Image (cartoon, rainbow, N blue to C red; front, side, top):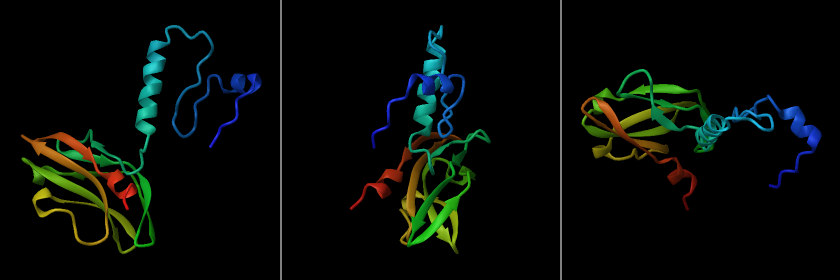
Length: 150
């Protein structure tokens, strides 16, 4: 999809505001120093890229993850997941698999031990979270295996 070029008046109207979906600030011309603004902007772009249902470390503690809000469809049922936090301490010194499932029409994030594998029922893979010594050591995003599949 091509976005139209902005006119000078449209650019002027954007200065000092933020792009609604991403939160990126539109700076004035000649901003100095621009480096901090640039890093903040790149960070916001990276964080907003494919953000739905993303799994990341939580500030709650060293063994919990946050799952970003998002929408999905499983078996023809449209599901909406609000942002949620999941405690994974019982998977310490192992790898936890996280997935989204339909629980009687409600979106639910579930976790299981990697040794047991992914569930047999319909689900959307979210992530593999490795824990060691009471903290998360890695998170592998598995959402795209659901999106980009045959």
